[in-house]
Image (cartoon, rainbow, N blue to C red; front, side, top):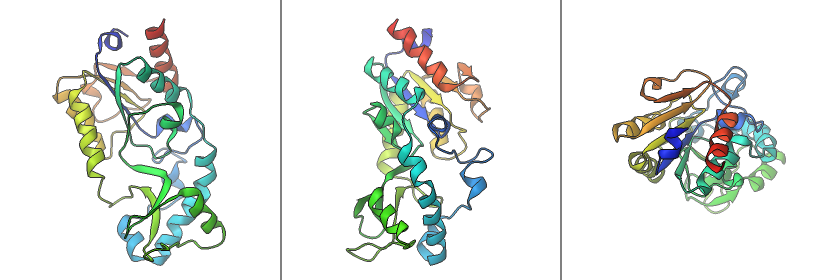
Length: 241
């Protein structure tokens, strides 16, 4: 708690585990998305009609899970931490938009957002709800009505280049903080996994909240193996109390 109270500028970093309490499946845990569906790479998506149908079938099934999800204690606590003036920015690997729903304003979405769809050719955007209507009509390979390019969610797929601006902003945010707070990420996917290392290299203290080990636990000053919402809630209560 002293690390939080003494910190002048905190960067938070969240992974898929933060949203599981909102009913959103994570990817790597048993029973997660990759247990139920095959990974369709970006290259496959671009080159194969069947791969696009397979990909959109998965997204169609997961739509209501995302649509009905509400912010949980972790999202709300991080939004409260921002209101204290201590939280400088929030970096997330999540694509669900729940941090923004909870009230966080400076959110860097490293892996894009599932709330929009984008034409991979011309960049036209749609609300994901509009594409869901097309999918439910039976068209599982939607094309752009402007250029006939392929439409996909505005998320980063395996094999797809990371968004340069967001990655650069995340590194800047990590390098200027004096406390880095990581919650519910396996830290197994690069370049996101290297962001805590950047904060450590720049001299920040690290707090990890994660039920399982990560490759970088040795960098953390404090490790919690508890429920993230409980820990973050107690942190915010301590600051406000």
